[in-house]
Every structure is written in C-alpha cells, then in structure tokens.
Length: 266
Image (cartoon, rainbow, N blue to C red; front, side, top):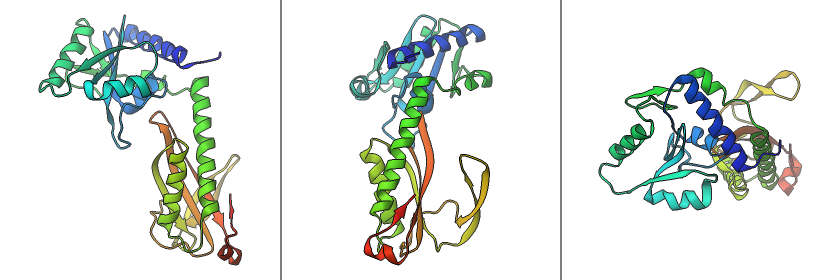
C-alpha cells in the first residue's frame, strides 16, 4: 500500500478506536511526545528535546479526534507540524484554570466512559501493555522514515569525521557531528566522541551478521580531551522527531598522514 500522511493518520485513528471498543472506554488520551509523534505520523508536540510531555496532546473518542493545545503553540503546530483531519481544541494560554478546563473537556468528550492514557492522570486508566505492543510493528511509511533518518545520520557522521583535524579536541569532533546532524534536519539527542587513547574497556559491536566482541575505549565517552593522531570514534543518537530515532557510530583511523589532513572515516 502506498501510504501518505493522511492515510497513515486515518489508519491509526481507526486502530485507536478499536482499542476503545475492546477496553470499553470512551476516550484515549496521549500525553507523551513519543505517542503524539506516533499518532500524528511524525509531528513533534514539544520544542524541547528533553521533554517527556509536550505542549500538545492527542485525544481520540469514538466519533472525533482532537489536538489539545494552547494559543501559544496552536498556530505553529497547525502550519509546521500537524497534518491530517484533526479537530483543534485550543485553550487560552494565560488561563489560570487551564488544566482544570482541559480535564473537564476530556471527561465530557469521553461521555462518562473511562479514559485510557499512555501517561494516566487522576481518574484515567493506563493503556494496557498488549495495546502498547500493537504500536511496535512499523508501517511501510514508518519504515521509510526510519531508513531516511539512518541514511542522513550516517552521512552527517562521515562528514564530521572527514573534516576532523589532529589538533581538534573531542568537543570539536562532537560539535562538528552535531552541526552536520542539525544541517540535515535531525535533532542531535546526544553525541559522544572519544580518542583511541582513552582507557580500554571491553565493548560489543553489533554488525549485520553475528555479534562480535571488540576492544574500544569507554562505552559512553563524554567529549573531553584532544584527539591528537591515531583513531577516534563519534557515536550519536539522533532523531527527526520523537517518533523516529536511532543510534550509530563511525570510526576515524589515522596516523602520520592525518597530520597532513588525510584521514579515513568508516
């Protein structure tokens, strides 16, 4: 099937309504940025990378599908993030009783039936584990987005490592990698960089085939000291939105030739 954004959202709304029928509930409320991204086919509900909850929520009932947000974020979300046939429930940003008003709307929309939620609040039920697992298999469109994130991230890491110089610190390498990620529209969740001289610890490198054991510096190397010449590694976790993230690593191998700006990234 050739999925587009609207078709993907419609499929997921129908899936969520099926959950309501199975659990005899009146509404499904999605607060987490991960679930918001899943339901909206990739939209970001928060401007912060570290936030667990965003500035917008998804509310699906048996006959409607809402985006709950406030006046401060509604226009940006409408024009830059959220697509699909949603009904927008926008609350005044400076309303002192904003949370109370939103809770009243949610309970009214549920029609007296229970409210399911990924992060349940008062008077709400947790989304059962069996339903959470139904989200895990990726649709064709989600697989395509995931592959695109991996392709762009690999190109960003290779670009940063090819630009590396012997006088760079690990912070310089991490900064170059983060810049290359952002330049490709990817959020740099974290970037780790290490030179080969860091204390050696046993790590595991998972390749396409069997799992192989390898020796490499500390597993989670925070950028700190100069690279000098020799080998280096840039490891990063990146995402295009909270719903599609991946991790990976690239290695830089050099030697005397690296002092003349010649190095090889792989």
